[in-house]
Each structure stands twice: as C-alpha cells, then as structure tokens.
Length: 170
Image (cartoon, rainbow, N blue to C red):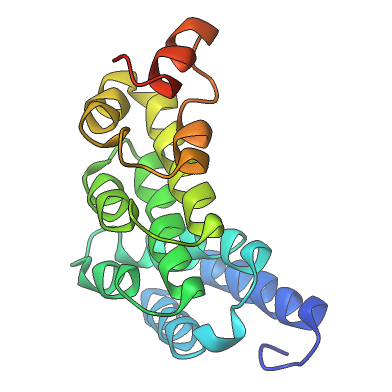
C-alpha cells in the first residue's frame, strides 16, 4: 500500500504503520521507523507527513540520538525536510524544544512554502507551551524568515504584537 500510485492507499498505509507503532514492542517500532525512512519517496504529501512523522520518527527518536532529523532537514527532498520538522512535534509535546528550534533555524531559509508553513506551525506550538522560547527564537530570526513562516508562528499573538513583528519593529 505504501508504494501505491494512489495517494489514499499510501495514506492508509501510513495510518496502519502509525497504529502498529503505537501498539508494538521496541523491536517492531525500530522496524517501522526503518521502513518509514527507507520509503520517504512514497511519503510525499503534506497530509501523509503530518499524519505520521511525529508519531513514528519523533516517537522513535525521543530518547535516542537525533542526527537522522538533521540529515533529513538538509535533504534536497521537500518531504524529508518536512518530516524533519514535523517529527519534532513529538518532542514539543514533551516540552522539549531544542531540536525543533535548531531544525527551524536550518529550515528558516528554505524556499518551499510547505516548509514555511510547517516551521511556522512548530514555532507556534512551542509558543503555546513556552512563549518566551518562541519569542527568543523569533527575535533573532524574524527579519529574515519567509513571511508565511512568520505569519504561522505569530498567528496566536495579540494583534498589536503580530503587527510589530510584521512591521519589523521588535
């Protein structure tokens, strides 16, 4: 199913992998993680990535070295870069922001709007848990961030604060 030419079948395969991952032993989780990363060419739409990267890649890497995320973040493949940032959502939910912020920095100059949206979303999620951590990052990067990334990141800010960021007056 994961290699199907039909998007819906690939999405179903991902849902099945996520479900199996949640119920499995460490050994089976490792196998699912490896299958996932070996098949990124088929994990090739925003909804497939967003439905799975944090549940499989993020969860698997929680207490392990995160170098795979940094490799993905530097990939030429759009979907691998999106996997890298969305995987950090698992850590963000645990109030662990370092890897998400470092990968956001790597991707802050990315040219693709689907990366802008994903990074902005993860920054907003950090801010939902620790506004100071988000703003510390933004104060260093907001002037050079793509507009869409910034807008997603500050979406929940009070209007006046949003306007200051958008008008470069912070």
